[in-house]
Length: 91
Image (cartoon, rainbow, N blue to C red):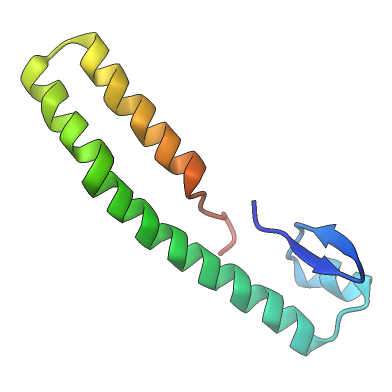
């Protein structure tokens, strides 16, 4: 989850209305949104690299083996990667 700190408090709501209600000016709001977009792009790239290096080989193995255990191992790895590199809905 994306969070930012404003006046010593941690926030995760990035709606313009919420940030304005906190007392942020437009430059501060833009800065938060730019940071959120940057982190989103970074996580997309990291996720793609992790899929290629970690989960794709497990998928190929699962297709070859055809066992429920091998498919579960692949699905578990995909879930782990998604947790490690979360994508934000509003980025």
